[in-house]
Length: 213
Image (cartoon, rainbow, N blue to C red; front, top):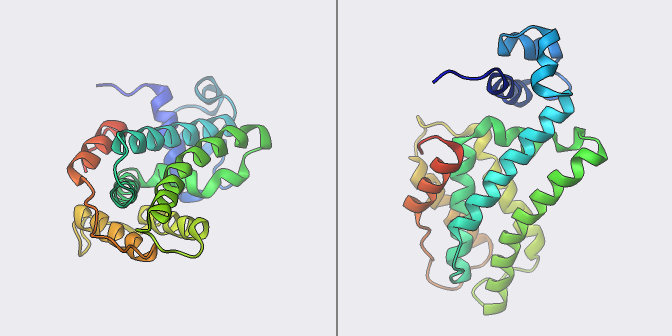
């Protein structure tokens, strides 16, 4: 299937923003990577900030939709938290460049462009906060600073996008399960480990990102 010029521009932006940063990527760089002239580039992207904001909103909407689907129906807090961790790891391994752009470049956006991006990020993080708070209330998580621990876990899991390689010592499923176990321990889990449904998480990530994991 032929790739449209708009798709080429978006793919070029994801690659360059992830490797060179937003400010380090010029219009000429984007045009060259997308195999378009600089003059025609704006027809497909608007401003460079418009393009960055669209990439971020799309990525966060994917992550939010995936997390909601994976935890639909609720379930006990340990399993929900482990599922969210596993899904986050799988998603960051499946789309490392896109997720690095979201994690690293939000501060370059103007306030008007940043607001909807941050709102999506906060909505996603509230799923984690709810699982942790429910676990604390149920006595299965024992942690002195739940909000700080949540941020630390998100940072840990997001780091997968920077270093994961399928040639590494752990298969992706094993890595996701290991991170879920680390998260449980960080929260002082006092119950039997909840099992993340890795097969379902993989199916959801494959659907949202269009890649197999």
